[in-house]
Amino acid sequence: MTIEIINTSHHALPEYQTEHAAAMDARAFLDEPLVLKPLERAAVPTGLFLAIPSGYEMQVRSRSGLSLKHGIVCINSPGTIDADYRGELKILVANLSNDPYEIKDGDRIAQLVVSKCERVQWQVVTKLDETERSHGGLGSTGR
Image (cartoon, rainbow, N blue to C red; front, side):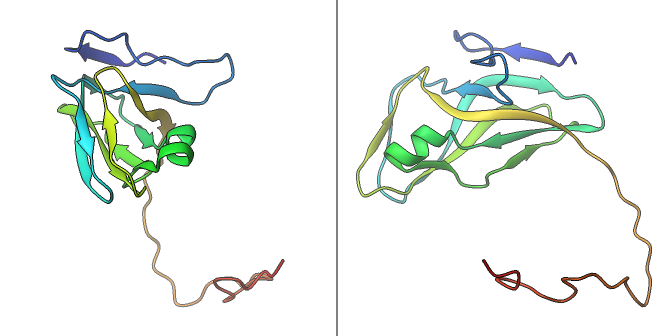
């Protein structure tokens, strides 16, 4: 699929790092480093503007290594970029560690996944079909 993109940063476009990667890395586009204190949040600019095709979304997810090693996560992960949004892609991050973390220009800070979206039409009913699980909720399937 093809997605129109404007790149106002000086970084390469997001790209897949391996042949079978599901996600592309997004990079920070900063004039100066951003220091996130413990439990602090920020919207990190990327310099990217997208035209996602109708019927699709772009999901923004945490990078696993950044999360594990430094506690830097996308706070609404997965975040959704809708097909009709044309503003700058900003990555919402938080520092869940006990130490300050410095994000520098060009750092890979999130993963981007393009996903097909189905639109639903609700059908109001008075009863749902029964399943083996039925009303079993959190922890009901055991180990």
